[in-house]
Length: 164
Ligand code: HEC
Image (cartoon, rainbow, N blue to C red; front, side, top):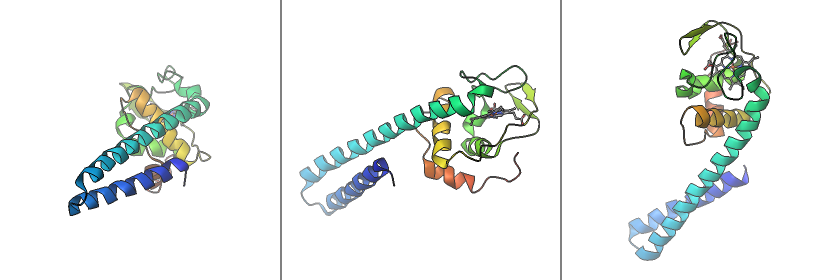
């Protein structure tokens, strides 16, 4: 377990304790103040994680995706579809599965037809996929949160096989 998720776990445990003591009605003021403190540190840990995933995701996108989809996400002529404006940004599960397993067959993106295989990325770890998805979704999908690694792991276990 990483340090960051350890901290989140501890803080969230504290919050749970605070809520419990508030419910019991004991030492209301201190419990309330503590609750607010613990809650705000929980939020800033999330913010930190989002920044980490985003900057790692930027590096990984540059190394693994930008060759084809270009640094600005607009794709390349009729060969590689744009990610910017793609409906995959609203379908996290599909996005995660094609990053890992690749994609083949005719697809339509922003009114244009593409039909060329996208290679699989069997070597990317779940956390790296989470970072790429975070980068792509924040940059071109208007998202404001990160994609947690455990949700990537869960989605990957349900991908349809033979996607490539
Ligand atoms: C070798 C070139 C290549 C690389 C590298 C590549 N792709 Fe693709 N990608 C394609 C092609 C070609 C398609 C269209 C596949 C088809 O026609 O079925 C595609 C389709 C997609 C789509 C669905 C259509 C769209 O544009 O929204 C997404 C999303 C996508 N790629 C994301 C990525 C991400 C993220 C990476 C990096 C992990 C990546 N691709 C790496 C070539 C590539």
